[in-house]
Image 1: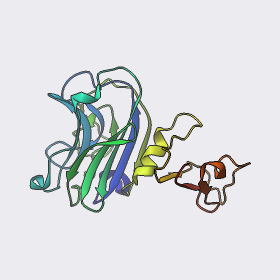
Image 2 (image 1 turned 135 degrees about the horizontal axis):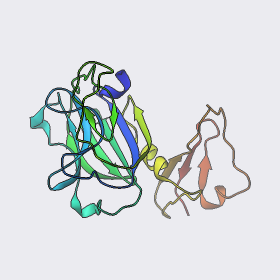
Image 3 (image 1 turned 180 degrees about the vertical axis):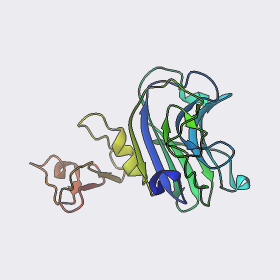
Image 4 (image 1 turned 135 degrees about the vertical axis):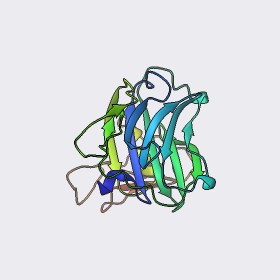
Length: 212
């Protein structure tokens, strides 16, 4: 419950293949409708919006993914929401890039009792007693929640779908290698990194440097 209700910092990341079937339909929610919590939904005139309750409305609007990002195309896209970036900002990332940022300090109102819901939102405050609304008919995959604000490089790492890491020559670069099961050390074979002026931190798994 603490991880997903939002608090003053949270991150939500997922892959989606299509928009919800109609306006006001939902992808993922923890209530997020007039009372408490949050939801990621399609709204009229806006492909996707992350709506929250409990944050000062005067501080900024709900962050959005606009029509310019071709969200109507049926293909897998990675979406991430970060609440608490730099302590007071909310961001939406699309395919690893920031597309919306709003000044939204504060704590999301807890949505205790309302169930975490994929593809809809629950309007029944009694835990385990469902009353679904806003059914989105969407394809979702690899949905992740974090009780902190993820850093930009962590978002980028989730979007990589091959064993190639893209870096620009002459531009400072950092990348944290995704890992599971708690590895304690990292290593690299040969000179694939050093030949490009990059280094691997064997303790943290972070690759840094300025490619040449």
